[in-house]
Image 1 (spheres, rainbow, N blue to C red):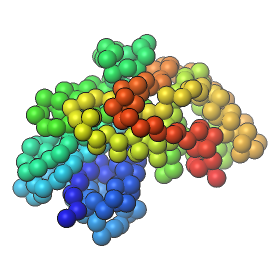
Image 2: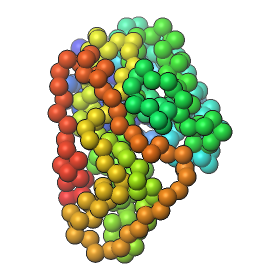
Image 3: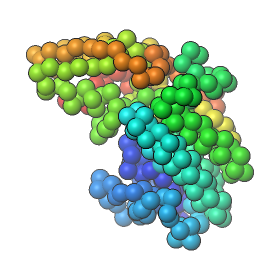
Length: 295
């Protein structure tokens, strides 16, 4: 009998990418989201559509082997504009999905997707580092606070869990990130990009999904791990220059600095993941990833 998996936040970039990979292993997937993803039509997929906060628990099956919680309101602009609503909704959503987890007869693992945003902007991004991120009085902080609260709730739920803190994923079909912004602006005669001296280490979505799948191993139970690409990071300015040069674009572009409380540097330490995984994961190079997206 095929094992059943619940994916909350299934229409998002990471959730939908994980589903495609899990289908290769013949899991029966249940997608819990506000909307149906038309790209995910498959006989082994069942959609549970609606607002997670309004769902009746009795309508949710109680025989899932795994639950993945990717459900969250996100986006920098959204966090700044609707900070209180985002904070409350994300925390309540996590509580509801934990409730679903507790009604399962034989749940093997509850996976919670957290974020690199929770880390202090000055540290080395290790799981053991202090969690002191953006100033609490900045609206952007509502997102990382909701995720850190989610980590607390999950780790005290008495469910077998794994928490992963995700660093800067990118890939095809992604929206609302730097690569999407670049792609959208590529054909304009003049474009403006923000904070060119900020530094990031990007992980291609296929590599991230491999990491997420790896955390099913027993060694990851009741652990919190960083997921990302630890290889040499790149400045936003350099990334955009590479893409424009590679695409041989003639349009002009400029840079401007803004204060949106975004960290100036972000590069994960994944030593803990490597130690627990005991298998190497080969990362797609940034150039290979760019080719995948822009060709």
